[in-house]
Image 1 (cartoon, one colour):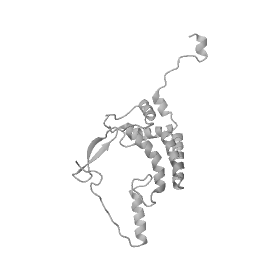
Image 2: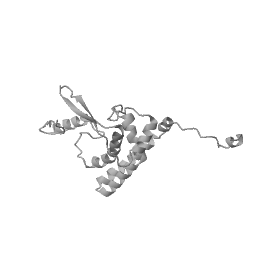
Image 3: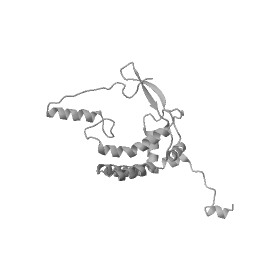
Image 4: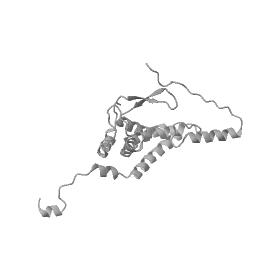
Length: 199
């Protein structure tokens, strides 16, 4: 190449570092766009427009922004981000995160879970814990982001278990307010080993 052509911008392109690409993603905009779609799903489900809610859900699952956010939650935000599945993959690089965001689109067969036995708090017993691979966790986070708004619109206002933005403290304060108004019975039930039985 001649010097004149180099001056005009025909020089060889430099390879783009994927680390800077991942860091340059406008996360505030990504979260805003995903939240807009989730809000539309919530409103459609609340008004009984199930077909419309399904359309928005399909759009959200196919959205590149939703896939980026799901990958970020699994690989950076979650507490168990460095827990490996059966593939042995613990932490992934920014380049692998971008590839993962592209690969979780479409129907994929889930890999088997890695079974780990963990100690129950305050007991000698152990309970089983199934750990999916990072790819499967990212797909689960993506599907959860689409299903959660629909079911939030249908749940009871007084249920507090495993709900976003609610905790045990909210349930305790609700019980306290209800008890102060009149006489109530409180039933505490623990269904033992209903979800898993040893072979």
